[in-house]
Image (cartoon, rainbow, N blue to C red; front, top):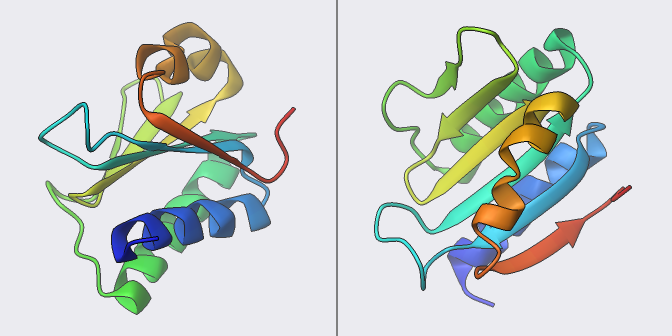
Length: 119
Protein backbone atom coordinates (compact mmCIF):
# COMPACT_ATOMS: atom_id res chain seq x y z
CA UNK A 1 0.00 0.00 0.00
CA UNK A 2 1.38 3.42 -0.92
CA UNK A 3 1.74 6.32 1.54
CA UNK A 4 -1.23 8.31 0.25
CA UNK A 5 -3.58 5.31 0.43
CA UNK A 6 -2.34 4.65 3.95
CA UNK A 7 -3.01 8.28 4.99
CA UNK A 8 -6.52 8.26 3.52
CA UNK A 9 -7.41 4.99 5.26
CA UNK A 10 -5.90 6.14 8.56
CA UNK A 11 -7.94 9.35 8.43
CA UNK A 12 -11.07 7.36 7.58
CA UNK A 13 -10.42 5.05 10.54
CA UNK A 14 -9.86 8.01 12.85
CA UNK A 15 -13.19 9.54 11.80
CA UNK A 16 -14.93 6.18 12.39
CA UNK A 17 -13.33 5.95 15.85
CA UNK A 18 -14.91 9.32 16.64
CA UNK A 19 -18.42 8.09 15.78
CA UNK A 20 -18.41 9.01 12.10
CA UNK A 21 -20.97 6.68 10.51
CA UNK A 22 -20.75 4.66 7.29
CA UNK A 23 -17.19 5.82 6.51
CA UNK A 24 -16.00 5.08 2.99
CA UNK A 25 -12.69 5.88 1.31
CA UNK A 26 -12.87 6.08 -2.47
CA UNK A 27 -9.70 5.91 -4.53
CA UNK A 28 -10.29 8.28 -7.47
CA UNK A 29 -6.80 8.29 -8.98
CA UNK A 30 -7.93 6.48 -12.13
CA UNK A 31 -10.98 8.76 -12.51
CA UNK A 32 -10.06 12.33 -11.55
CA UNK A 33 -7.07 14.61 -11.97
CA UNK A 34 -8.03 17.15 -9.28
CA UNK A 35 -7.94 14.84 -6.23
CA UNK A 36 -6.94 11.29 -5.36
CA UNK A 37 -9.32 10.23 -2.58
CA UNK A 38 -12.76 11.03 -1.22
CA UNK A 39 -13.60 10.16 2.35
CA UNK A 40 -17.34 10.25 2.97
CA UNK A 41 -18.72 10.25 6.51
CA UNK A 42 -22.23 10.57 7.94
CA UNK A 43 -22.48 12.89 10.95
CA UNK A 44 -25.26 12.89 13.51
CA UNK A 45 -25.49 16.61 14.33
CA UNK A 46 -23.91 20.00 13.75
CA UNK A 47 -21.89 19.58 16.93
CA UNK A 48 -20.63 16.19 15.75
CA UNK A 49 -19.65 17.69 12.39
CA UNK A 50 -17.78 20.55 14.08
CA UNK A 51 -15.93 18.08 16.29
CA UNK A 52 -14.86 16.02 13.27
CA UNK A 53 -13.77 19.19 11.46
CA UNK A 54 -11.51 20.01 14.42
CA UNK A 55 -10.21 16.43 14.42
CA UNK A 56 -9.36 16.66 10.71
CA UNK A 57 -7.53 19.94 11.29
CA UNK A 58 -5.50 18.39 14.12
CA UNK A 59 -4.75 15.31 11.98
CA UNK A 60 -3.47 17.45 9.10
CA UNK A 61 -0.90 19.03 11.43
CA UNK A 62 0.21 15.66 12.82
CA UNK A 63 0.33 14.03 9.36
CA UNK A 64 2.03 17.03 7.72
CA UNK A 65 -0.84 17.56 5.27
CA UNK A 66 -1.88 21.08 4.31
CA UNK A 67 -5.50 22.03 3.71
CA UNK A 68 -6.41 23.72 0.45
CA UNK A 69 -8.81 26.52 -0.41
CA UNK A 70 -9.33 27.60 3.16
CA UNK A 71 -9.88 24.17 4.70
CA UNK A 72 -13.40 23.21 5.74
CA UNK A 73 -16.27 24.63 3.73
CA UNK A 74 -19.88 24.39 4.80
CA UNK A 75 -22.89 24.71 2.56
CA UNK A 76 -25.44 27.36 3.46
CA UNK A 77 -27.90 24.84 4.91
CA UNK A 78 -25.14 23.15 6.95
CA UNK A 79 -26.07 19.64 5.81
CA UNK A 80 -22.69 19.06 4.21
CA UNK A 81 -19.18 20.33 4.79
CA UNK A 82 -15.93 19.34 3.21
CA UNK A 83 -12.28 19.57 4.04
CA UNK A 84 -10.10 19.93 0.95
CA UNK A 85 -6.70 18.47 1.75
CA UNK A 86 -5.58 18.54 -1.87
CA UNK A 87 -5.10 14.85 -2.55
CA UNK A 88 -7.82 13.90 -0.04
CA UNK A 89 -11.27 15.52 0.13
CA UNK A 90 -13.36 14.71 3.20
CA UNK A 91 -17.15 15.01 2.94
CA UNK A 92 -19.01 15.31 6.26
CA UNK A 93 -22.72 14.92 5.52
CA UNK A 94 -25.86 14.43 7.53
CA UNK A 95 -27.89 11.36 6.58
CA UNK A 96 -30.39 13.31 4.46
CA UNK A 97 -27.67 14.97 2.34
CA UNK A 98 -25.79 11.71 1.98
CA UNK A 99 -28.92 9.91 0.81
CA UNK A 100 -29.85 12.73 -1.59
CA UNK A 101 -26.44 13.22 -3.25
CA UNK A 102 -25.37 9.54 -3.30
CA UNK A 103 -21.67 10.30 -3.83
CA UNK A 104 -20.74 6.62 -3.54
CA UNK A 105 -22.98 5.86 -6.53
CA UNK A 106 -21.67 8.83 -8.49
CA UNK A 107 -18.07 7.68 -7.97
CA UNK A 108 -18.78 3.92 -7.90
CA UNK A 109 -16.09 3.22 -10.51
CA UNK A 110 -13.45 4.13 -7.92
CA UNK A 111 -12.02 1.57 -5.52
CA UNK A 112 -14.27 1.80 -2.45
CA UNK A 113 -13.04 0.79 1.01
CA UNK A 114 -15.66 0.67 3.76
CA UNK A 115 -14.40 1.41 7.26
CA UNK A 116 -15.96 0.72 10.62
CA UNK A 117 -19.65 0.82 11.36
CA UNK A 118 -21.33 0.45 7.99
CA UNK A 119 -25.09 0.27 8.48
